[in-house]
Length: 70
Image 1: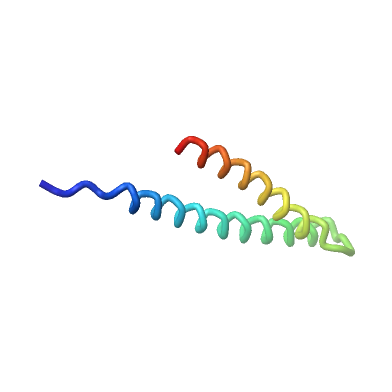
Image 2 (image 1 turned 180 degrees about the vertical axis):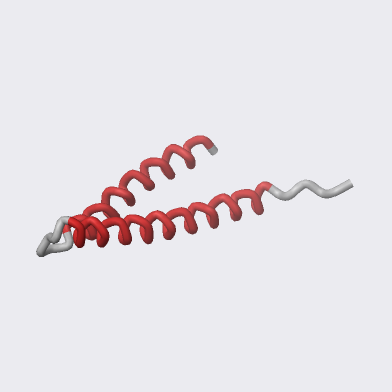
């Protein structure tokens, strides 16, 4: 009979996964912003600046609702 993983280790894995998701999201949005700035030939990096900020806000809202469920 295998021992059940403790609740503490499940939280550790959940929060570690959230960190990796956040870094992946930021990297993806930075790449997309750079791509869009080059495509539209903008003099300033508007997409590169604003896409990660919007993504962070939406991710924190999602994280808030995930943490409320616990």
